[in-house]
Length: 152
Image (tube, rainbow, N blue to C red; front, top):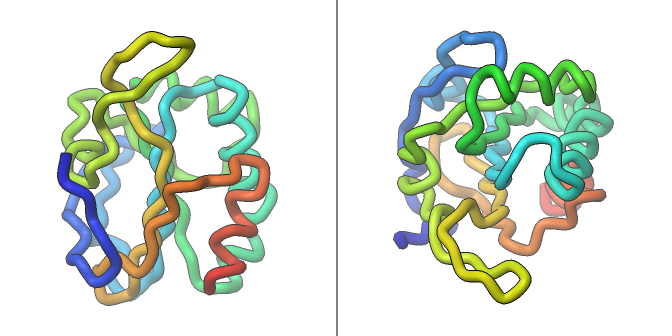
């Protein structure tokens, strides 16, 4: 599992969001991007994190950030999740886990004594120039947007 660090060039990607629109990192050149990885739509921690970004959206936009969420769930699953919680940003379907692997967030996990491979919750702040500015690996799901703004 490769792990990106501040200063690294952010891997390029392209995926469909909950509307079926193709979204790529390249289209946000010149903007700061919050790229957050989460394990599964409509689970307690992932919902808290998504709602934190939803509720902090105007503050994040005012600070110049674009928010993109990524999980291995399908476009259809993302659409249901986004509609249910009125999410106001793109959720990217990484069903082949190529973005997760490029960012080093797919790997071994443990839950209730069981080991398995999955998405490790992490957030990457990508600079206007396309480099990793910050990596947040201890995500506070209820305060995710504030974590971004606190480090800005």
